[in-house]
Length: 108
Image (tube, rainbow, N blue to C red; front, side, top):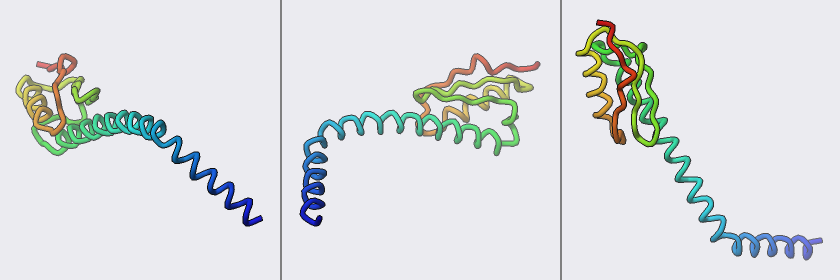
């Protein structure tokens, strides 16, 4: 029984070693996709938390979405000054490549 187990263990190791380059390439591509999603999620969370912690921004009224580092802001805020402040604060976040704020309207 021990000999049989050792043979299968050796076969498993050999299979793993032979398949490593292909598996490694697929893993790298998948990890890159996951990192992009994590980065976008992190940016969205960070922007939202900055908005919620700033008394001059109606953080609950602004929807934040991030795709490939571009932050899309939508919703309605009371003034142009608040809209401009939200855009400026979002631009300051590490990893933000751009801001799309066409969906962020003012009520006045």
